[in-house]
Length: 190
Image (cartoon, rainbow, N blue to C red):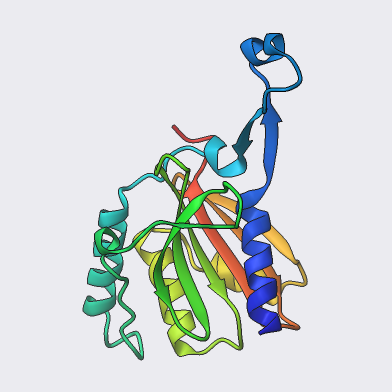
């Protein structure tokens, strides 16, 4: 339970940080008006491919590589999933595309339902299913999975890389088998 709590907290911290923004109009109205909050997720560019395309490519790749993967992990149809808040306040939304006792895969959205990020969160000792699912994401986004290997073999707690128009953010605490990998559009790539 502690691992799930910590994983949830890290995920919330990654996406829930927000900054207050004032417009000139709000400044003129006085202190009584609430300031509009803009989350980190709101500031991200939209994910480079539609969510339905991401899920289709993930599932097609898993099926076509069933000899490579020990178990075929398939993501759920996103149109059948409900948006859920990332935290109790007005934070970003997400759809849980896949979850089990070891890991989950989420699609992260702004409050106005703009698709921004895919997150992979491992919450317990990794197994072959975990590895297969994560490597599948790297494969369909055409990102070199050696970055993942390098990160896991390092003593680093956090790392980010940019490749093929994506920014990949790694975070780990292997004392608790916690690994978070986020995929988003690289802000520096148009």
